[in-house]
Image (cartoon, rainbow, N blue to C red; front, side, top):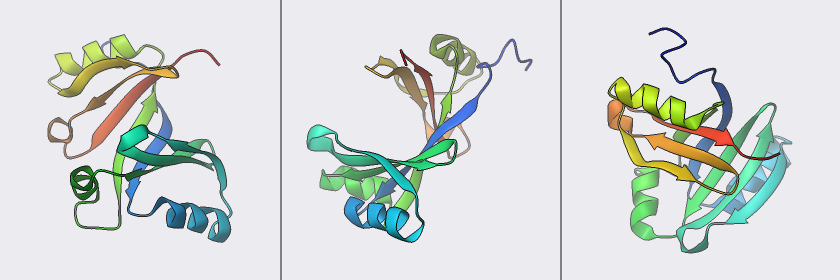
Amino acid sequence: MTAAEGPGRLTVDHIGIVVDDLDEAVAFLRDVLGLTIDEIFDVGPAGRGAMVAAGPVHLELVEYAQPERRREGLRGGTARIEHIAFDVADAERAHAALTARGVEVEGGLRVRSDCTTFFTTPESCDGVMYQFREATGD
């Protein structure tokens, strides 16, 4: 695959980590590791999250509220890396290029207030879920 056929230039935006206790995870990263907590946010009935600055990459911590989603996300542990997010210049191009190569996508392209994004299925990406996001504004 050439660069012209691929999703475009990729840079890591954030790494999504599912945690069982958001307050405890934030306290560790802030008080022990000295990282900056950029934002703590509510995602409605789904749960809560936090964005933590770790150099040019952020850690996105997510605590799911729904018991089934929490079990699925944690897979028996207390924390688990859920996804790695890449910034792309053109989310539609990335989506088309990856699906043309057999990568499966969960739910298609999503337009949110901060970005246009999509997630791959772990089954089609050697066990890893990836997010591709084209930032809007800023």
